[in-house]
Length: 316
Image 1: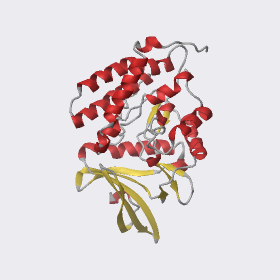
Image 2: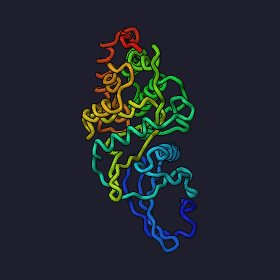
Image 3: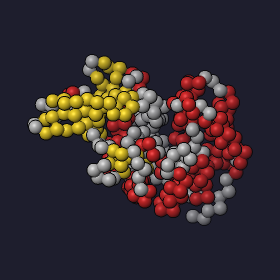
Image 4: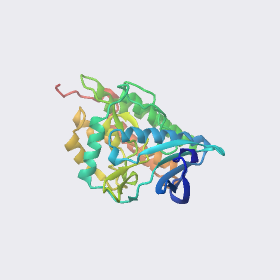
């Protein structure tokens, strides 16, 4: 890790600065050529998750290319020479405060990210594997947003069952949900003359991953698991009542940026999100598995015929 610091650096201090269940954070202060500099170092503790460091580096790098004033800028990632089971991700240190950003200001940032980013392949996916916490994002390139969403949904369910054991009811609900509800709500985005642009998404936007820079007063996003996807997917956590943004922000986004066609499905597309990943990585939220099942049952009751329930009343 020392090799990525400027040549001639003297480490002045290393102090804890944040942590998760799978990583620890450190503030590293150095002196080089008579100047003091500060860095943030995230250490991934388990070898099976070491690729998280690369994924976060590439995610933040992609975001920084579009909204450089509003992201933690990545510097380096790698493995520890003395312990190859541990990986690190390094950035310049930013003095952040845990405060919700002004909604109008943050909406403008999200608008820029979603409207100006361009997928390098023109497809949905990402160039490396990224991680939504420990669960992997299945980022293989595809032309179909329905396919991308469905395979990620299956992957998240598989991760959950690896944690808690097989759940036959959940497995059956998942396949029915993908075949019917996902098809009904996502297939119309790319059929009937409609299409959507793959746009760069942060991947895990909620108030815990957005803070205010004390010096610039700008909202700063971090802890991304980026992918090129449907822009509305970045709203998946933001309307959750557990979080600060709430549905008022979702309404603002819809009014300012617009909803993809068919517009009448906008809120249903938002609501097909589940809390499976939260339940998988946070045992205290185990009850969200049943909440997710109830949500799937609700939508299956509404769309028993899947895509056949879609009424194309939009004239293009």
